[in-house]
Structure formats: C-alpha cells, structure tokens
Amino acid sequence: MAKKYIILDTETTGLHVKEGHRIIEIGAVLLNDRKKSEDHFHTYLNPMRLIDDEATQVHGITNEDLNDKPLFEDIAEEFLEFVDGATLVIHNAEFDVGFLNNELKLASSTFPRLEEICTIEDSLQMARDMFLGQRNTLDALVTRFDIKGYDRELHGGLKDANILADVYLHLTGGQKKFEFMSSNENQSIDNKSENKMSTLKNFNLKKIVTNENELSEHENMLSDMHERTSVCLLYTSPSPRDATLSRMPSSA
Image (cartoon, rainbow, N blue to C red; front, side):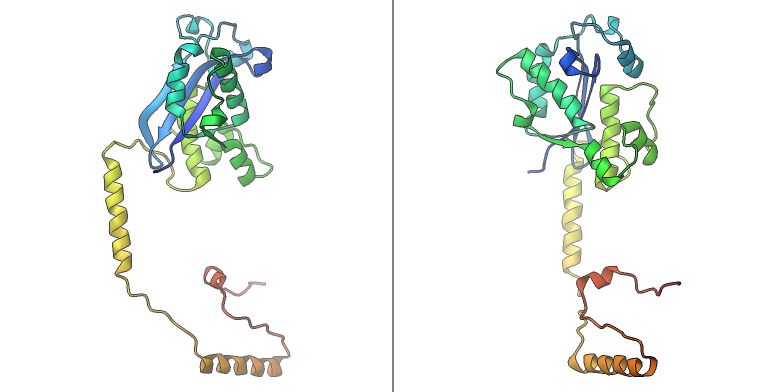
C-alpha cells in the first residue's frame, strides 16, 4: 500500500504555545501519487483568547472573524481521523506539532500525540540540508523554485499547505508542480507503468566484454607511452562509476 502523505500548515494567535497561544486555522492537503487530491481538511477555530496584533499582520485573521467558529475540541476527532497513519509534511514541524499536541491535550486526555499516529517530516530541515547557509522560509523557497500562481501578501493555513506541496515536490525531485488528480487517473498510471516495463523486457541489450588480448594490448600501449613521455599513468580496472563520469579533458 502506498504511503499516505499529507501537507499541513496552521495559523495561530501568536508565536509561543507556552504563553497560552492557540491554533486558529488548520489546512491539510492529501497527496495521491505525488499529486494534490481533492481530499483536504480545512477549518478556522475560535481560540477563546485574543490574537496578537503581530500575528494578524501575518495571516490577516481577526478576533471578529472567529467568533462563530468551532472550538478545537469540536473538530478534534475528525482531524485525527484525517491524519491517522499519514506522513505529515510540515514546514518548521516543531512549531505546528507543538501547537497541535497542545490542542489535543486540552481537548481530551485520551487523544494521542501526533507522533503516536503519524510520521512527521520537516520540509524546513530538508531545505536546510539542501541549501546550507541560505534562507529557507516558505517564501524564500517559493522565490528560489520560481513557484507562481499564489498571492503571498498574507499567509493562510490551506493556502500555505498547497504552496508547501509544490515546494516539497521540488525538494524531493519530480514534476515541477503538483496537479489535482481525479479518482480514475490511478489506474491509467498503473497501466502505463506496466507497459513501460514490458517494453524494457523486450530490449536486447548488447553487452561488451573486454577480452584478455585487448587488455594486454592496452597495457603494452601504456608501457610504450610511459617510455616515450616519462609520464606516469595509472590504469585501474573499469568501475561502474565510470559510466557517469565525463571523459572530456581538462581545459587547463
């Protein structure tokens, strides 16, 4: 069975969960065969506290926007069902996971921590490993990978989850942008893969093997060159890496 990947992002009332800040938006997008599916989880939440002005400047969500929204405890079971067994891809995972685990703890002592039911994959750490010493915020990666089609004036849980899906693909290699996949595309992809494998099996690949006479002639040639040029040449047996290395001479 293929792994279940979910790209997730949250927005909060402030930066520090230990100061009593709460989640006000959750956005999560399910990936299906490296494409964004139509399945997603998205909700705004009433945090039962005021939002810091600095936070509102980032995501644009005000206290008035959330007065009629559900509490986390009202959506907790639905959220856990959606993410159960998935690999959660989160940018700066420590931040979001810390807030989500706090919400789960406040909602019920019986709810598990995310790490107990999910695998956490931090795209920020992936980017830091790939781009040492560079800025690796989500906005910086959007610019670096030239990802277009999103309004970046304000952050948002679902919007950032969709953006992170495109960033994650660049980080892991593959197509340049996730596209939405209809439910009947999976079978088509499987059939194409089987056809390609069948075609490869019908190829008659010619294997070239160097015999002892050719190796002896090559050794004699190297010996003759050494006597004439006084240049020391090192000959080693062929390596599988040789096929990937350039044979072009140095321009120096």
